[in-house]
Length: 91
Image (cartoon, rainbow, N blue to C red):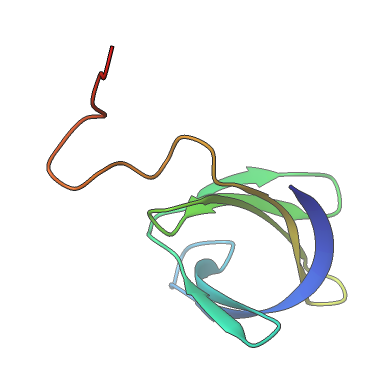
């Protein structure tokens, strides 16, 4: 699902690392705690984070100049698995 909406971010700055470590985002009234570490890709004007909360994969863009975070997309297909192991084959 493509969104491209501005969100608030909870980040951690680590000495010696050039970009913030993303911990959680707030989207509307919902807080989404993210698993670490996120994969970070550098763009010309932004950093793009690809991360998961265990149930869905999120694409989040950080624009350093204005210090703004954007939730670009959510992909919840195929990440959730039944408890206890791999998906079942019912056929």
